[in-house]
Length: 411
Image (cartoon, rainbow, N blue to C red; front, side, top):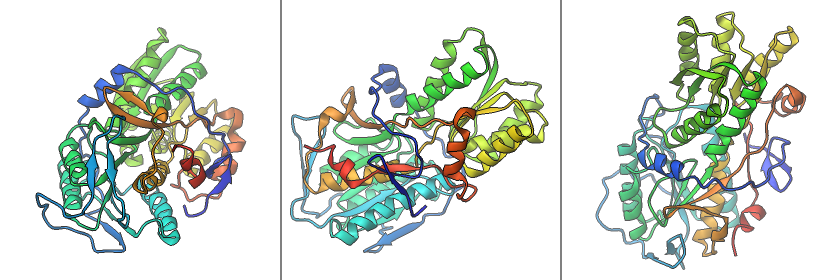
């Protein structure tokens, strides 16, 4: 996705309006994030490096860096890193690859950084991904390589674990590197996390799904990457929503890995076990694999939730056109969260002061929560179809901040 539509102050391809809602301040979420451990279950791209402006550093990390920058504690929530007089060079550690969603996320980030490189705001960037998806130890080594790289002074991380990266991240900060974490969060204090509000992202659609089935019956959940911080929070949110419906039974909960193939096989096994759910709660584009399994088994539930690719919308449309009693709850999980984080990271690196009243802070952990409010069901299917009809089959509905919107987050 290279071209996006300008709409409502955001760079986006959907027509839903974005607004900020209340920040979720739940102690239980913070506790879950501390406990979550990422498990590398998916095969991915091998050690890819996309370098714009310099060679990828694959050597071992050293104890010190000669970047000439320094970190200094402040009375605020975020630790300030002084990059005065330095050319901004960004190192990106996406943590996993290979899925359409993650490929689109990296493309969004590089689109924004190319924009800033052209304008002279940054010197360059490099992308160094895991060879093993979800492996936190491997990601730690990538971070340490960035610490050892005198060219890199800004590090962006999509974390594979909430706690395992903390030591390396704090070492990077002590070495004078600005670190911004995106898409999920870590528990290191003083670091800025930029993330979709994963609790609300799962809680709201689950409530809608449960209302569609009449507040009673059987549901199953095909979740995301087992142990991933975002997945842990989302499962907590769906559990909380289901608890509000005493006549609803959760018959199974299995990880689908945010992957169509895995989600399809997991759903097929659930259906083969004899469970016939009224609704299936899924995450991201795994919903298409879920629906494929249902179609193959000749069993169509009343509703499936998740993100919506063109392939999912097409299958959804075919079922409704055939007269099936089927609905869907589609809430986009924008890959552009990384691009939003990139805009914020560059502005902090330029010395701008982030307005900390925009943050959700739990036990010293600071997160800027990007709230997605677009929802597609049968009621507004035509609107969603207009968005996706010209997409490739796996392309994701997307949105991210414009430069002006990012500027509004700063004093």
